[in-house]
Amino acid sequence: MSQVVNILEGGALAAAGGAVCFLLVWWRERGLKEAKRVESEALLAKARSEAETLLHEARLAASQEALHFREQIEQSFTARRAERAALETRLAQREALINSQLERIVEAEKQLNEQKAALRKRAELLDERDQALTELKSQALQQLQTLAGLTPAEARETFLKEVEQQCLKDANTLSRHILEEAKVKAEEKARQIITVAIQRYAAEHTFESTTASIVLNGDEMKGRIIGREGRNIRAFEAATGVTVLIDDTPGAVLLSGFDPVRREIARESMIRLIADGRIHPTRIEEVVEQVSQEMNETVVRIGEGALAKVGLPPAHPEIVKLLGRLHFRHSYSQNLLDHSVEVAHLVGLMAGELGIEMTTAKRAGLFHDIGKAVSHEVEGPHALVGAEILRRYGETDVVVNGVASHHADVPPIGPLGIMVSAADAISASRPGARSENMTTYLKRVEDLEKLAGAFEGVEKAFALQAGRELRVFVQPEHLDEEECFALARNIASQIENELQYPGQIKVTVIRETRCIEVAK
Image 1 (cartoon, rainbow, N blue to C red):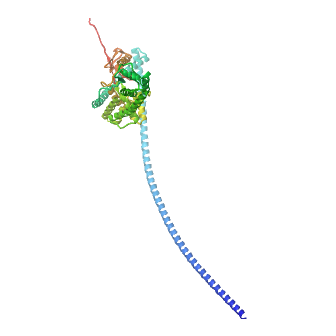
Image 2: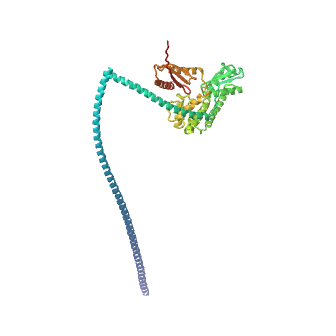
Image 3: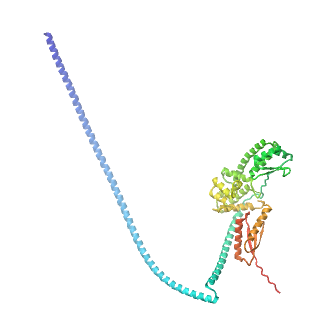
């Protein structure tokens, strides 16, 4: 019994403990829910506050932007109103100008109408006068025909012929006076410039004489040069490209070749072989190769020296090589490189007198004969060949034209080509510059006299002063004095077009009338 009571009491205690625990859990959950509710209400209140703040800021920003946009629109409207006002002002001014122009046009039209009416009256009056003049001319022509006994065609032909002769005479007289005046002025100025250039430039009046002959100490050296069965001479000719002449001159060896550089290489190689004494094909090839290399260096050094003599800056290497090769070429026994240097100095002095850029003038003068360095390799006049070479290696168009036009192969663009031509003639025609054989001299004199004698009315012609002057005697009954001036110009023009000559040729036409009577 007591056990049952204990069990019941324990159960009641357990039930009471469970009820107490339940109440504690319920109370705790209720507190947590209340805390969450309070927290959520606080968060909601905070969110509402922030939302109201953002909404207030957005409204402020929107109002400010709207205010700024309104100000921009007002400024734009103000600017447009100002532009419209300015446009209206310009339109009003233009309208006023148009109105004034219309008034002037109306006034001008009125004046034109008045002038047209006056001209119409004057034209009618001139027509009446023309009719009267035509009638007078017809009457005068009939009277002239009656007096002269000529038909209208014959009278017209006679009158036109007289007018033509008178016009030709007046034209010849006028052209002669103009040419004489221009010639005097041009000759005076050109003589002054050329004289100053010649006086200021001092050069040697002798030319360098080179030869392709080599003197031997004895004729026994000829056998060593020829070699066994001619192998040495064949090897030498194959290596140098020149012809060796052994038997023509006693005690000497002659070297013949068209290329002056190769001929110089052969001459120097032969001198070294003779001095060395060892002459065989292998040694010949070694010496020729060595001399060829030295010659290339010598050519470049000579070309650079020519540029330095003239005072010019360095040029293209290929131009320098061609310039150095001119040292071994001659024209009428005149060394072409020395001639080119002399022409460069003369052209520079002329340019200084005329106020032209001297460096460009000197380049044209120094390079004017550079085409002769390759004339045996390239076809064409040396002036055009040289101009093409200079254009290929970057020279200016002024220098190229100065070189191309110095022999009138192309028309000169400026005065440079004429200056180069004058300096070329000065350098070539001074005493001792060139030598000319008798056959060439006689041929030129004969061609001059034959050319002048072919003109109508020429009685005889004589070339004087080594072909520098041509005197032409005409028949006085065939040519008058005016026609003599035209004949002199025609002869000079034909000489320029058909003949080759150094310097200038003066043409003098002489007309002499002899009246002879015998008193008996």
